[in-house]
Image 1 (tube, helix red, strand yellow):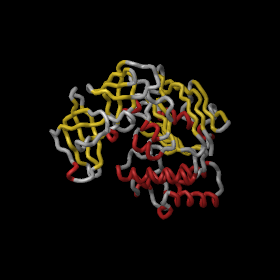
Image 2: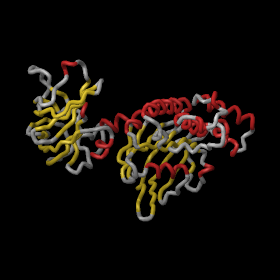
Image 3: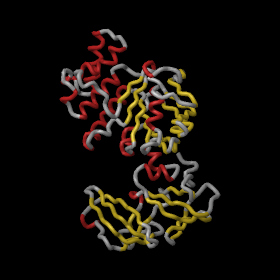
Length: 362
């Protein structure tokens, strides 16, 4: 096991800067995820860790060792690819044993370690089967067993679940997280799936166009996104145009008191998650300044209801509510009052590049 330091790493492809001064410290035993849209640089950074790419600037450390000039096969990493990359002509056992044989491990130890790895991924009973006779989920387990059997100091996983169907993906991500915790192996995981990242990670780095936007625990990334890009990429949110003046924000003609540490006044972007908006249910309910809107769409999804609401300005927002009972459902065309909870909302500068009300929060 080891910690990993990515120190001001930059990587070019021609004139394009795929990674721009990435600076990350991944703790020993941590499950760390690189998250972002296609082309953001996350796989490039993973491949630099693996030694498949040589960065153009900066340094990479495994523990105290700078590995810039250490070839991939000497970095003691396990790698799980999106495409599984297993050998179709070999049995399950021989696929998992491949890395140990390449390292000249003795036959009795290979037998022991391969069976231990197959037990961990629940494939020991299929050790003699050919991969072509197995499902996608089972093939991914073979790839995982092959990566961990060599006892790597670092496990790298590049979109390992993207080829699986939705139900199997949920099962596999839970199994991967459980196995990683049991082995306490430092893991760097690449995905573009926000829910997957939130579910498996100790911490997440969100990337966009080669630059790290934010690093934090899953709840920090979701509840305290530092800029508009992160807020929009992680989950869903509503953006409203507002105006800030003297610790008051004006939205849809309604004024809300708000606490801002910075001396900023002028146009702002108000970001509030669909589940953070409250609907006024009764005439006697007092929940704060209210904004009026008309329900344009009601979508019942079992455990929750999604409302699309049009505000007076013509702006559409989305609201999520737990579906408690049939009588609580609101119909399309109804006029409603809603509370845009300023205590949970994030307020950004007009450009969307800076959160104005996160200073002093963790």
